[in-house]
Image (cartoon, rainbow, N blue to C red; front, side, top):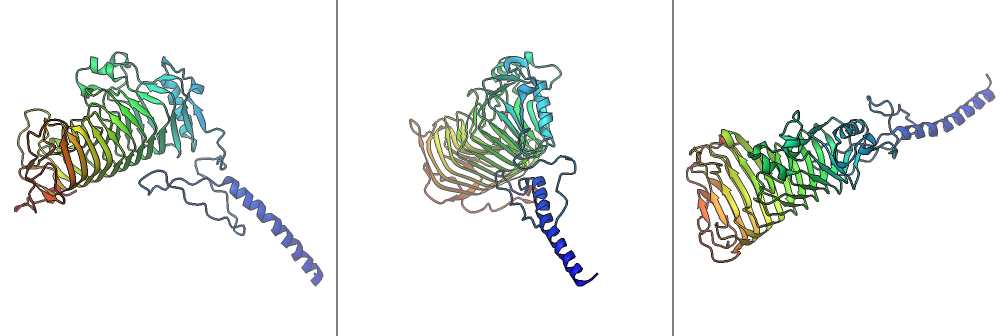
Amino acid sequence: MDLAHVCFFIWILAILTFYQHPIIVNARYHYHKKQQKTKGSPFIGEAPAPAPALVPSTPADPPSIPSDPYPTAPGDTSDCIFDVTAYGAVGDGSSDDTAAFREAWKAACSVESATILVPSDKIFTITSTIFSGPCKPGLVLQVNGVLMPPKGPDCWPKADKRKQWLVFYRLDDMKLTGNGTIEGNGHEWVQKVRLCQDHVKALLFFMSSNIVVSGLRIQNSPQFHMKFDGCEGVLIEELSISTPKLSPNTDGIHIENTKSVGIYNSMISNGDDCISIGPGCSNVDINGVTCGPSHGISIGSLGVHNSQACVSNITVRNAVIRESDNGVRIKTWQGGTGSVSGISFENIQMENVRNCIIVDQYYCLSKECLNQTSAVYVTDIRYKNIKGTYDVRNPPIHFACSDTVACTNITMAEVELLPQEGELVDDPFCWNAYGIEETLTIPPIGCLQEGMPQAITETSQYSC
């Protein structure tokens, strides 16, 4: 082959290479899956990392999920809305729509970024159901209508357990949202079932991660309105939770064995704790919550049946607590082990609250609890800018710490609590409580001991 033919061949090869590469780039972009949220983040909502730049000179096979033979192109959402009425839900308030919800969930669970739509202006009745995963990421349950269980225990299917109503199990990157209502029909249970522990919990999230619950009205649960157990990365915001003041054991939000939680800008009124934090919780941030009437915001109860309980790094700030039996409370049983540490209560307004600030290490539901030497160790508790009014039937500050395991490193700053009406009958109460007043407390709390106890019990058994 002479030199002219060689040059001509090279020129043709260059032209073919020039036109090939744009085809490879376009095909790769079409199949590129959108990235999932970063699992390392404690909260949902952070922007995903940008997609890596495409290099035309290094073509590769189109990326895809091994179990998904048909990757979805970016922006393709034509099949991502799953309306429960399309699966047979009636929404007339009396028909059983359980089967339709289960079918819609099953279909949406296998599609990335799917939305299960519960349309407005309808009332859907569903019985006890477990919505289980794992599902494709980005699943949304959009409740714009009303969801409710059967009306009371007489209508509850005999085959269904009465411990919980809607359970969300083993999910990651899931959102429950909407402008609708989750109605618990709790009044029927209070009237007909004597023991409140036999009442149904409305919503349970179990062994799940990166969960968002927002925008909903949740009301009249027979027992707990929302419970999170064994979860990590939970964001709760802009909820309205309500039930009558005298309804027993109707905690608004209860968390246990759960880490990295944010609870923001919500209103809760009920017959028990607005928010209760059980054992195994850490890194919890509560901000902008209005609470009451209620039993306040509580850590505990902890250490029941001589169990170990570990709670740490809890912050409650910018809250309003009104017309409640308690304000901010830590409650533990005698005989427990473990610790409560790194707790901050800051910028809290009290309005006619009975026990504004309380640590109760003698918590008991009967008069038959025996004195025990072991206790959950309470340390590093800070109260700052706690102001407002209290009900004079109880002193506004109450530190009842264990006889053998003192409460230590309590800090009081800018605490000003005045009687709602009348005059203070009892002074603030302290028992085996150690800490400091950074500013003068109103009413004065002369019973808080400075420094540390002379004899500190071996604390290895209380470490977490």
